[in-house]
Length: 302
Ligand SMILES: Nc1ncnc2c1ncn2[C@@H]1O[C@H](COP(=O)(O)OP(=O)(O)OP(=O)(O)O)[C@@H](O)[C@H]1O
Image (cartoon, rainbow, N blue to C red; front, side, top):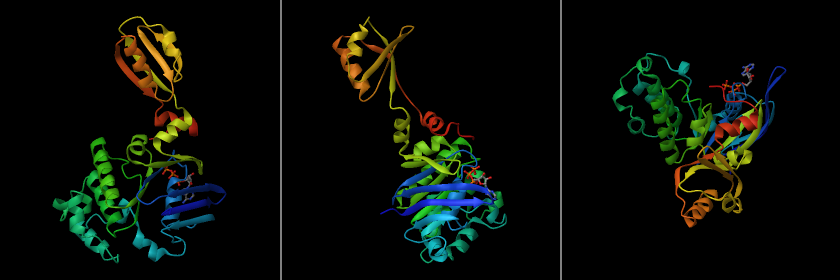
């Protein structure tokens, strides 16, 4: 059974419909991504799920709870990241953890959690003195402190340098391995591709597609392209005869074979049968970036 269910969610700001009939379901244990350009309605959607915003239409359930009515209970099962502005600069990491622990019925051991997030040596450091990456790690720690079933992470890695971003990704996987379902709002294609089991692509308040990263790519184009330099002349007909091959083109000294299915193994089998060695062989596929552009008509604006 789905742990988060969103059905036909509608949210308006005056005349502007920011979320326009969004529907998706997240299964327990998933890292589920919401990906979309600026202003697509991602934050509004997750804020309705977190019970921070009222909705104008549709239905939401998180662990069977309606965020509109069951706010107190929801806080025990859903962990949300704190916004930076919600923590005073002077509070120490240890104080923030101890204080926030007291809000939960069944918190995890916060000292152990700080250890897992490599923040033990920062326990007496004031929030205002942490680096961007350390603040983000603390923010993840606070989101999972209450031992939630679901953690919502919104634009977690925005503003981090590439190394800090990779560290945050490792951490998110660690949290998932502890059994927490993760709803992740992201701007970064690489992040979505690396972390998410499934993704909802949202544009202008609507879901454009929901699938695994690989599924999204193949929805748009499941062709592959193989490039190589043949060690000896090869009659193209032996390749075009393969059911997997759509076309064979020459590009300088390279052959470019386009096709679908198990193209690579079909082509390499034929090449070895003809005693042709494929030098500098590369397989190219449509990227998630390409799929996103095809689905939404625009690139992600980072
Ligand atoms: N409090 C508000 N009042 C009026 N309009 C708002 C409010 N919050 C968001 N909007 C508008 O609703 C739309 C969706 O905003 P939202 O923040 O949900 O998008 P987003 O996909 O999270 O964007 P971003 O990636 O830039 O954070 C935007 O057009 C935004 O300007």
